[in-house]
Length: 163
Image (cartoon, rainbow, N blue to C red; front, side, top):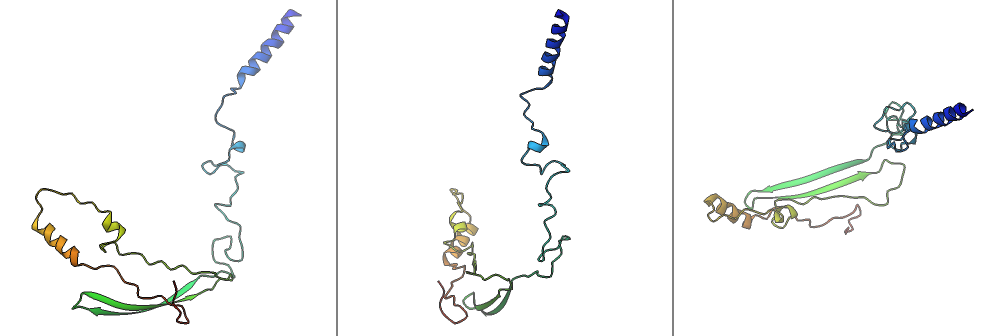
């Protein structure tokens, strides 16, 4: 009888040590991020999105596919005496989406060479005791360089000024 109790206790103690309770790697079914693993049961939404009328399962455009369109009419004149360009641009935006647009975003990036541009103001030059004549010429040129563009106005299709 004692041998039977001893063997039973021994089998229970061996089964307790067989599994490490401090195992840090969870099984795949408990892992939230399975993108790095080749899991056959992983959802394929990121690889193969659900097909719709806009985009087919192959990735090709569907029958209800649309793209936005913008037509630009640019008139520019060169003023060589003043080293400048003068221009006017008309942008006609066509909303081909089935949805109504509540606003239109048009971004005009700054000229990074303009004296007051963020890129120019953040440039810290090394000051040496002696500077070259080329450095002085460039400094004099930068003093007179206007650079960038001046927006004189932005208007809508009816000619009303936009903010």
